[in-house]
Length: 442
Ligand code: PMP
Image (cartoon, rainbow, N blue to C red; front, side):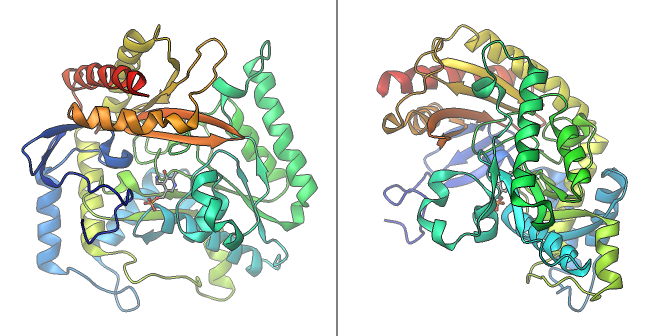
């Protein structure tokens, strides 16, 4: 038994001893294709020499400097780079160590902004039922993932909730996409009004849903409608791009494709592609100016804010993505992956939906394709798929959850941006075997 508290307390996972490009090798000599980029983290694959060299250079210079005393070159340069690529006006960056911290920071920045504008009675966030924003208590509170929240619910702040934008499950028979979208926005407006707009700090959402549903993109116009409602009621729009940001969907920010700018955006995972733990919050300058004119400080802080080696790794990852044209590659390879998934699973009796954006793609498993009835949760199909995939040397990110009382099993694919057509084809072939074996097993 390991001394580490692993997620599954009955099982110690294989020990990773080497990783290069698309492959991870374990201590038994088995290799795995990293088709999920870990948890949609690895954008450049493993062992990229340019990133390792940048990290070495920074370690030799300054391995750590606390932000109470110093700023550092890689942190400044990384912030400049993020701002240059963020929507206009989002020009203030706060670095943290990961996605949950990024969301906590976003929530606290939004709240402090309200306090400093004389709106201290704004204390509530509105969020969606199908969402994951992190595992710390504030982020867990805004997230809607029932099984993650269950034991901790008494510790969490109350969050009014609205429906997710989940066309496959929720668009009614005979309802157009436009009608469906209008209905969702009407529900959001009603919730804002019932809550009292003057009590609402902001609305939080993942532009492309990740960990609770597998790569669910919004319908056209949904986020433009969200933006308009936030403006109408003077509430902040906080976009959680921890998974879908930093190029994963083919643009730096997923919301670019919806032609929408949030007030605050949280990023992490792909920022340094897993080479170092780092996340960031990018905020509208006017929000931070308000704090600057008011109390003069942001009441927040962590020991590893702006860690120079993490910033150097992130900077190198982002430079390689730009230099090698990997955003365009994500778009092209995303189309290839979608086509391959369609060819493999388009007629599969237990694959109800194939969806996603860029290299954030998923399949949704169903017991009955016609009725869309999911597999019973106790069959734990998603867990069986993961095990069957690992046995075939394939890392995928399966998840199961209960959303609005309905259980669903999904498999998320989020391969590194460097994946070749041959890699994608091998991934889809192994996934098909794993899915069929898992269904037979449960
Ligand atoms: N937000 C989203 C959208 C995520 O996908 C995740 C991680 N799955 C988080 C927040 C939390 O990030 P972390 O695990 O780095 O704390």
